[in-house]
Image (cartoon, rainbow, N blue to C red; front, top):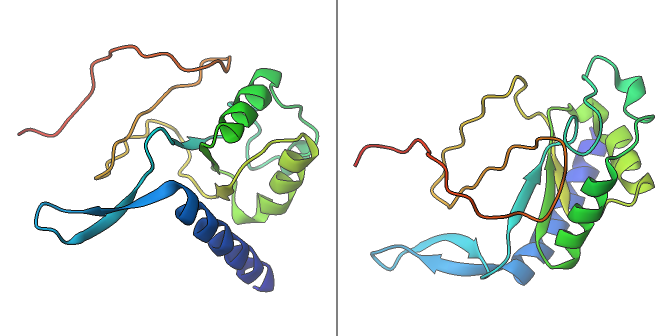
Length: 158
């Protein structure tokens, strides 16, 4: 339990620093305070770990998590985005029981990041619904700078 509290306090301190740096206040159409938004040009990257920045290791084989190598292009691009001022969070299906080994692995290999969210539902086919702008990029084997392409998306009826 103490580990959870210490992680939580570290995350809260980190979140406070990020909010002061990257977030700006927002108001709704009636002038009421609304959830803050990122400063212009800053992106919140939520990045999976297994199968995205390294080989796909299932939670049932945690001993492999410390042994795999990162994909070199992932390390280079993610650290570049971090250095450009973007927010880097890992959003992984690994559980809290895997947090320490995952943080050790990320740090050992030199990943720069702001935080990590554990316990993403497993199985894929994600559909994220939010009141903020959401973009999704499916990883298909290589990290590069992102380019703009138009694709058909699902939206709510008007």
